[in-house]
Amino acid sequence: MAIAPVNLASSTAPNWLKEAQESLLLSANPGGLLGALQGAAKNQPGSLKAFLANSQTTANGFALISSSTTQAAFNLALQMSDAAAEKRATDKLNALLAQNAQPTNYTPPHGLDPVIYFDDGTTLDTVNNILTKLDGTQIDTTTGLPYIEPGSIIQMANGAYLDTKNNILTMADGTKINTITGLTITA
Image 1 (cartoon, rainbow, N blue to C red):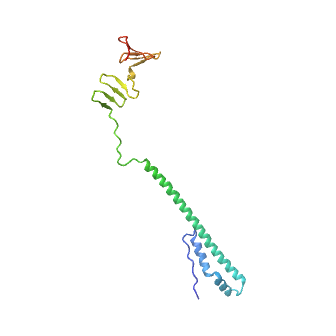
Image 2: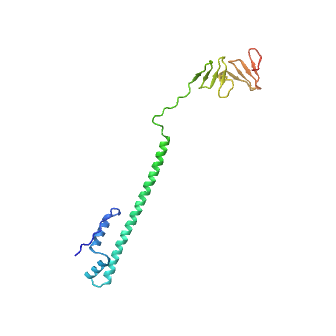
Image 3: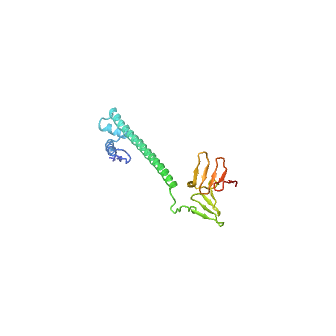
């Protein structure tokens, strides 16, 4: 007497214990043409009912194998797509972090000195943007106009203003008058 092959449970099946039990039942009642003939010989020789019952059992076994394989393939595809999406998100996050990270040996650039001294005695205040010449004249380096300290200016109602430090009255039309001498400044 030949020993019937035993199907082993698949590790990818969702319920391997159930599959193992069904496999044992199927091995006790072999299917296929030989199983049908053997079953018919044991139970009711020449019976169509026994042949059809065995054929149905075999068909159910193949359907179970096909269903388990399809489910396992679906589960594997789902796991692979989840892993790929997670890897893409991680790679994107790492790229953003790398883009915004400071270099490890980074030394911030040294800014300008607060005051720069020139050979002719002129100084440049880089904090307040004021160029002071040797004769004391100050120029606002952002506008190029003469610099007047805001605390020494008195604004007049007609648009004129008085520079109390230099004693110069600037009229609304731009005319400058020395308040000590009363003379118009033309330079």
